[in-house]
Image (cartoon, rainbow, N blue to C red; front, side):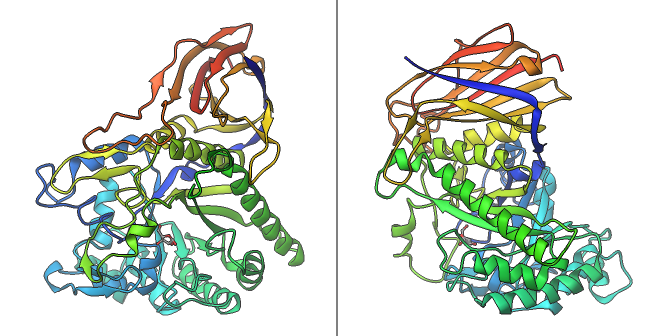
Length: 502
Ligand code: AHR
């Protein structure tokens, strides 16, 4: 069996991880909200119409922040339609997804749901069809204590205390021609600056995320980031990145190496942020919010044939394979490796729409394959991210050369006195004999070795067979003199947890 070694040095700290990198996203899209989190006629619905089974699964994922209400949807959304008496709320055409929105769920209902799942809102404002005025009104409505038109309106809607929403996205994917109110970098940069300015004047506590590119392949990528930041640097705190991954040509060796592409994307955006910082002689550092990332390709073709103006249709309902879960694990490793600059990230999305949690309308809720790596990272990936030295065989594939078969990162939780090693074996053929040097952490025992494995790369979970791809506990790992030994099987996601004496 081929060998791989990993050395961990507890002094090689990347950063203390901002837990918000385990964020997610709920958009008014397809069955994410209606027939997803909210289904008042479901036997498991609570007093507010929210599905308790979905709440339970979302709580399990321990998601600290959830982006809302879009996505493309937000660029045509009037937030005022979703507040006030429900009987007076209008039904409108949503031009982002060509569906109908009845506004039964809006800001207050979603906030209520967030409390039930112990999460916080990352609120996006509409900079597609609207501008600075509506954005600052929304901040005033949400965050101002009272004594002004919008804050008193909130109170009249029954919410006396301000929400104190901290994180705000200045629009969504404004570089994309598909976006309602698509803009050039100069148009958007100016608008982000002016909207950000009045939002911050309304509530100086807020943090603002400007739109970066919709993906790394956008023709305007890099120039977009540089121009937007040049025009809005003093008003924004974060720059967003979005990217979806897929394996449409069934080239799994390249697919499993996509973490490299994500890493390059992050490093390039960091370089641009720092270039603008230098150019402006600024002391301020812009960090990153990777606020849309996931696998998305299975449902794209089917979605083209959707009839227009349906209410809560099945849209973007990718059914994820086992290999998708492996990639999601790899992408999580990349996010953790970049924890010094990526302070927020949102798995897009959370329920039914390209999601880890699925529901059958009137039926059960179930977990997709990708639920598990996200769960593991969210639960065990909190603390300090440590750089690891990986010595592993390498491979070449269509899209990359010299890809390490093992991808890994470690997280040390000083409070719990545990360390977790996340490991992806990208090889489709070879198990690896892994030796990991944990001496600097004074590792004293193996707590567990969780493995996500399956003989079929294309295996999926479903409502009928929800436990087809689920993690198992492996018994083979051993620790002697601070060195861990175990076998990392081919094509597996591994979570190796040890107790530490430091
Ligand atoms: O998450 C689905 C869509 O992907 C979002 O609405 C949009 O921002 C992105 O293009």
